[in-house]
Image (cartoon, rainbow, N blue to C red; front, side, top):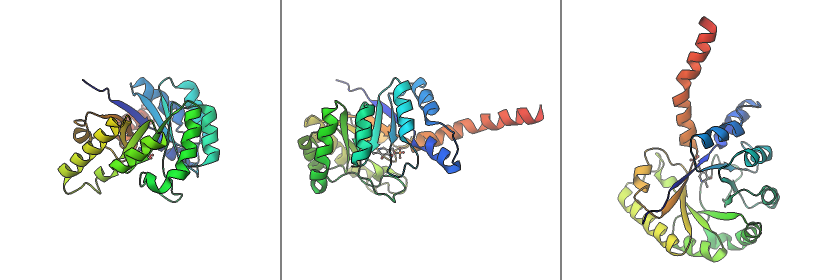
Length: 241
Ligand code: PXP
């Protein structure tokens, strides 16, 4: 049998660029439209406590205009989650949030946070929204994710990033595969994300039960590299012709 693989593209960093200049553009909704037209299976955004990239208005616009599933990542915060229950994205991914972090640094270790996570999962499920938990990849977390009512686990892949690539990659991948298979056999959907770039896919693709990829930074980076020469040429034409 063959399990379909889906890519949900995280467009947070389009909004980071907007924030860097405190401008009205680049607009995440425009990027979302292009991502959809390019054939992606979904759009992902992270509504952070400090709203440093994506804001509520972006999410409302994307939800209204985009026709592919929207996933919103969010920390355990009542106010933001109430907003999302109203907006009804396809999926909410709960993530542990640390106010000062540059990006999400770890997945949940559910054992330590079970009682904090549970009421949010109940509310999200009641609103008929899929719920994913971003976890550190181990079997205990998968057992608890099922017990707590999650539909999906997103295994934190940040160990695959350039700065932390494990010395023993084969052993790391074997363990990841075991955890992924364990989650799948427990009835969970298995996604991966965080820090994934184009060079990592060949390692993960053989793990059949991994069906979802949540990728942002590397795609937005490549879009710059791919687009910059055209952008320069367009300006040169205006100036010199
Ligand atoms: N998955 C989760 C849970 C995240 O928090 C993020 C970053 O917002 C991503 C995936 C995407 O990571 P990256 O931008 O490094 O591809």
